[in-house]
Image 1 (cartoon, rainbow, N blue to C red):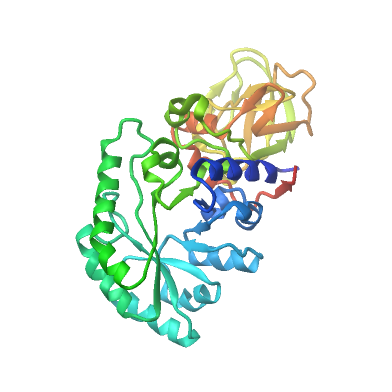
Image 2: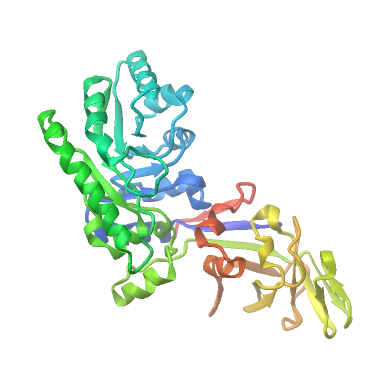
Length: 377
């Protein structure tokens, strides 16, 4: 076995239920973009759609794939939609984010007329992340443009927070205030048109730390997969934290073991020199398979219930570990790269700490070519 991922559908469902309980029935949206944060797009969505008021993706292609995979829950595309995908998006009954008042509106209207059905849109407001979205002062005029087009149906208005993981975050409250002010200014127009849109601004950290940001909908991404947006989020909530279970295990097996003498190097660049006689094992996964090169000489995998340190540089398709303390290790011995063996674990958070990044990047970059097996426990 070169490697495989095992995904617990039961853990995904339990996480979804815990998060839905936190914010209330019909108020939880779940984000499955980027191949379900590495867990698999369609299987993840199918597992949790019974708990989802919305399922959120980034790309139009993801929305189409969900419909083709049998997902029936409402789907919201959070990213930009290329004009040549509009017909497919409409056929998939997907909702889209809109922040444009120019050419794209004509493209939307033309696609809607071709299919004789309107687009359901969520109006995006830029409250300070400064990526996509209308400026707060532009929202009323933009909504006036939108309601004039019978091809559009406003179902949501939303924004995104930039620092909600910070425990002391005045900026989060500033963003919320900007959003609420923009909504209040547009409310008379919306009410006149009989429109009552979903308001949403919170992702995982905000929904857990800042209850006032939950509004009508909370978008849970990283928490769905049993991972915390930050250690500070988990530690601050303490006993009140939802019980989250990591859903992903990454496994492989040793391709070879060998003895090396004191003074012998391991791997490219001779960055590891054995201080004494050691036994090493070669794991047939490397940075092409999602193992960050930054784990060189600082990470660890599990063999036979023991953490075995990574030695030498992580290569494109291979990683070498020290199995001296695992005397029965041999070619074919199971290796857990992410997961648990008894009381010993290596987590995506561990990888993130060793690589000086975040757990989001670790799981999202696990490549599609590694087989995923789904346990319906």
